[in-house]
Image 1 (tube, rainbow over the protein chains, first blue to last red):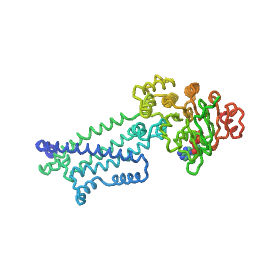
Image 2: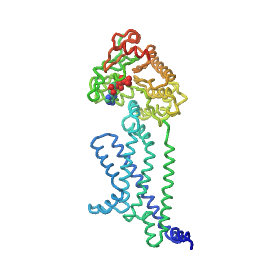
Image 3: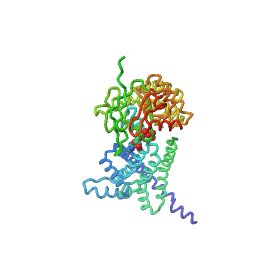
Image 4: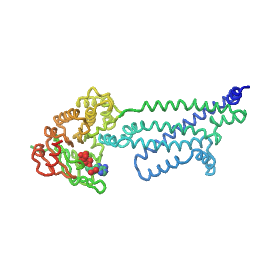
Length: 226
Length: 248
Ligand SMILES: Nc1ncnc2c1ncn2[C@@H]1O[C@H](COP(=O)(O)OP(=O)(O)OP(=O)(O)O)[C@@H](O)[C@H]1O
Ligand SMILES: [Mg+2]
């Protein structure tokens, strides 16, 4: 047996792969579902916080800044573990899925708030003034004039951040969420062969590569000259 | 002949930014169809004065009545007043993500609640009025500075304001583009629009202004017909300023 054959036998073992493929596929859909939920809730919450911040109510803004700094400082894994293992003591026992989803949502919303807020600030004051001078109110100005411009500048950093944080779904493996990584690890321990990990890596590429490409496309699509 | 009430009536207007008093007691009446031209050195408070008139800047003291409405009263719906006072900015401030027509239509749709067809018709007329009927689908970055400023004027005119405030409308333009904007303003005046114009375009002032107001350090130093203020100013400060802009 050549060295290459041994390598292939170890890491790309067809029989093992075929056997555990259904588990990995199931994990794939758990990851997709989790990532989509984190993406939707995280961006929605981040945007909502940025909108509240644009009202510029001092005490409210201080709270938002505290929230944002806290969740940007804490490692997501720490938040997941806290929610999963500590919350039951406070009378709430989230499943691993819910704990992972909530932790990543909080982290994404914190980063997204900062990005949206920076985008809102980047819109020149003259845009507000032009709109207000025609009789538009605060909300209409924000919605029709400021946000559409703010969102454009936020798309590249938001895409990067969203990809980075949704990849954190793999952390769910620590709290028994059978997403891609957990499924692969389980398969490895049953088969004594690392091939399922290769399948897992492939699954991540299948999932995130299009997302990265989409991010690039959106970036060029929304770039415009001043 | 009975005198009409002024469109804009400013009394004892003061504005401070922190400890700095930028407007120090301004009294000014603007009559219907009058074109008042405001000049003065940089930092004299011209922009602040205009911006107080639609409360983009909150006055510290004094009173401002527009078309009979006390605009500083807490009971006044400021958005309702603002749509009757057009404002044109030095940097145009067009919405870059909307076409020329979109820029003009936004307030028609959102403030006056016109339906799409009506708003499009009004926008078309307003753009035609500033000579840009063929540019309705163009985005601001596809227009020259002069064209952008004319779209901004159309945006103000579409709401059928009682008066239009211009803050250095041609200062950001290349010299060869100034003429087209001034021509639109001349047409406006011809049509009887009440206008307050902050500008250094003396030729335009001489040709079109009813009255020139010279401001310095937050006060109105002198005012009168263009020929008097430019030709025979009474105050030394006015004379110094006028000489300086003539030389440029
Ligand atoms: N938002 C602000 N905060 C603090 N100071 C301000 C603010 N806006 C204007 N000022 C100050 O008020 C003074 C008058 O400003 P204003 O813009 O009204 O002058 P201006 O006559 O329009 O000058 P210019 O010809 O340069 O446009 C200036 O000293 C300026 O620095
Ligand atoms: Mg100014």
